Length: 115
Image 1 (tube, rainbow, N blue to C red):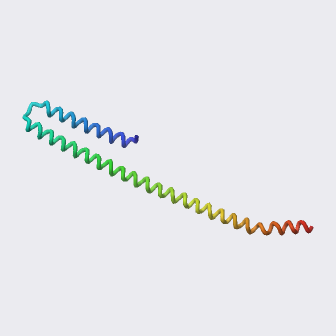
Image 2: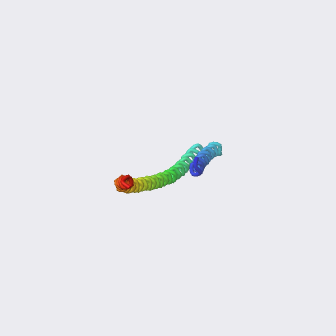
Image 3: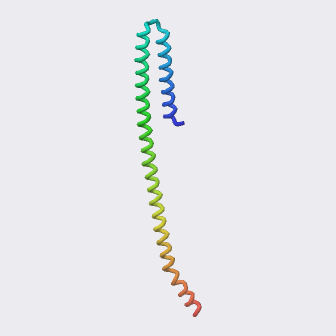
C-alpha cells in the first residue's frame, strides 16, 4: 500500500474513532435528550463533511495520478513506436544496400574464374 493510501486510511480511522468517541461522550454527558440529539446530529454532520472533503481530495489526487500514468504511458508507447519505425527504416536501408551489392559479387567471381 502506498504512503498516501496508508495516510488516507489512517485519517479515515481517526475520523471514525473521533465520531465514536464524541458519540459516547454525548451519550454519557448529563444533559437533556433534546440537547444530546442535537449535539449528536451536529457532530455527525461535521464528521460527514470532513469525510466528504477528504474523499474529494483523495479522489482528485487519484484522478491526477491516473492522468499522469496515462500521459507517461502514451509517451512510452510513442517512444517505442518511433524506435521500431527507426529500426525498420535502418533494416530496409541495409537490405537495399545488400541487394545492390549482391549482383556485383557474382561478376567478381566470374572475373576471378576467367583469370
